[in-house]
Length: 239
Length: 161
Image (cartoon, rainbow over the protein chains, first blue to last red):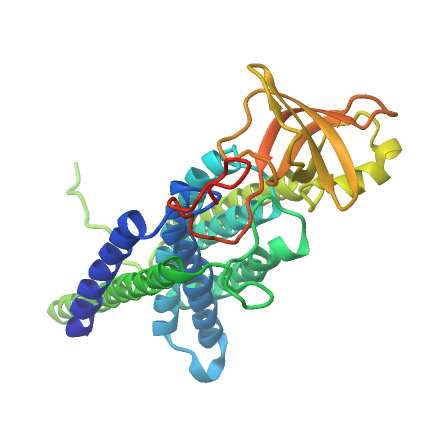
């Protein structure tokens, strides 16, 4: 595990650095957007991680936890780790989108279906994290959170298809469009692909780190509980 | 004065009332905050209409219904119709064969130019007019990314791309 984390950490830093170099200095400006296009090597990859990887993984782990045959607290911890990282990424998605929107659209924010459903997703998963902080028996908390994760993840396909189902200011998908025909070419396309790989690697590293911390915390709590029980038993024997 | 006595041990621990209430209260508070936030977003974003704008065709066909109410109009800037001044810009936006003349107050955004799809916020000047008075222009750029070619020979209209 330690070795995997080291490899993932080094790889994610190197890939993100390469993405920044290619995105800022090597790729050409866009015919319409000029230099503003450079945010394409950041914003879609952040959204990809938040929506599909983090919240998809959280929902999958929630289902595996609720399914009696696969029920394990490890799925609960993995789900929570994915949500924590996902909330960071969706925050960055909204911030970078806003920075991109101001010079291209002319507004920092607007209430179109894509932006609103994305903000809604962020709020729902913030609610998941708040729910997790409510004191409860670990199994009760895990069940509540699993149901909350599945409920919140229903918004993911709504975010994805919002630009197809409704008329929005936000443009349609460049790669995952209905025809699955990327509308970006050459070095720009390869750098976009690299950004997806870089942030996927970063996500894997962050989730595994967070998961390991959660495992250590849980095992620490078990040790504390065992010590407390032994102390009480010793008190009982002494009296 | 009697000696202070040690508290009598009880077989069932007494749990303070606030400890049993607090998690429930916190759960309720979390629920209220989430419902309020989700409700706000739904009302603000999706309350009026899921469609963010009306196309030129839709707006022209619903002109009598729309009257002089404020809405968002989408169309492509017709080349050769843009006229900019210190106070704003005038231009035509089209969709299929229909065209609406736009009179905008304020500076257009950075990417505003001919042949770009735009969304203008405003209203028709009157129920009979096809002039649209707007106070905001938003550029609806496409999802296609094409490298610009700075070395390309300029076209007849002076553009490079």
